[in-house]
Length: 501
Image (cartoon, rainbow, N blue to C red; front, side, top):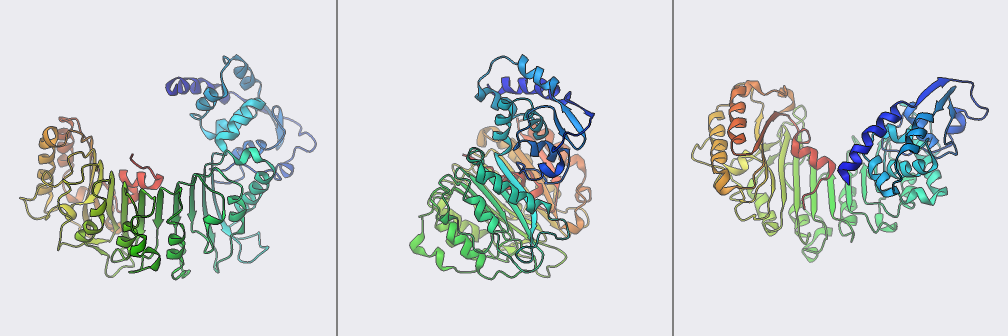
């Protein structure tokens, strides 16, 4: 049904693009001011534009020939197109509409009452807002303009009055900035009281008083908390928030970013080991020089399928970049060796790796399908006898190897050895790694030397040679130069919360 729906979506999109607008005399009462009292669905940057105009109509009574800012929107083309569509169930139409851009969904909402309701289901599925919180209660005018906060409050008012729209919301993403002193975010509490079917929540940063157990959120599976608060010192508050939510019964994916992890925390004591239902645990953009109490946190998980850790140290502010010890990761991840499907360990910008130990063989990780890992975790870089073939898991499908260049400004002296190791991997693919589909070579400099090409490290012909070598055994080979993990193929997956089953 999916391919049929995509085929239907293309002519539908073409028909919608023919919906014309012509100058006309505005109807009395149909003004921008009256529309401003309505709340738009979100999941786009909230700016006053044509898109917002379409969007705001969705909560109003207008269906066709709507006047807005001096223009009639003539929906006759789209209406005729809708009448010509074969009789279809709402489920098929909904699947078809899901392949359309959001702007076309706004137009669809003006075609008919049925299309309006179907478009609302898609447009309200996820809410995404960026705004600044006021310095003090009652403040609404800030620099920069704070229209998005006003619109967020309007959205809450609309949801309070429309129980049907509340049931459509599955994901909420809120990035709230603070000008100086922290203020309470009571609007978030109001929203969480209205979204019983919420499945995913992303907060940057979470308010200090956050306690999701006080709301009815039985379907919440994904939680991402980014504690990026600038100069504001939150002390031990982030760890208290993490511990408060770690044992939510429905939670399966927990992503924690920009957070200091102390050496110990009472909430993750041995009495809680192997009790949490989380299967996907991610620590992103961590700027510590060791893992803190992450071993204790990991030990509290019953069965871990995905683990991600990224250390990120800015080159321009760090005198002693973080050093990650491979054997430390092996020690606390070993308990989940039989269940891990997706493992990512990375360092961004000026973060470093210890050369005093190796992670060791991954042959015992029988379910591991996706692996992103620094080369120094696997082999002694300068030792030409060290191979990847002897240590990679047998069921591996996707591999991303990080080659840390840091402040290197000239050619990579170990280039030939690194190329040879990947040639050996390609040669062993059929016999030892039959499921291998993709290999990514990630040259990772500090940000100050990130030219996004990496030509200073060696000739591009090396990469073209490896691409042809892997292609001959049915494996896709990619190469890139980036300072940050989030800009790599595996980093994209971490950002979207994609989990392998």
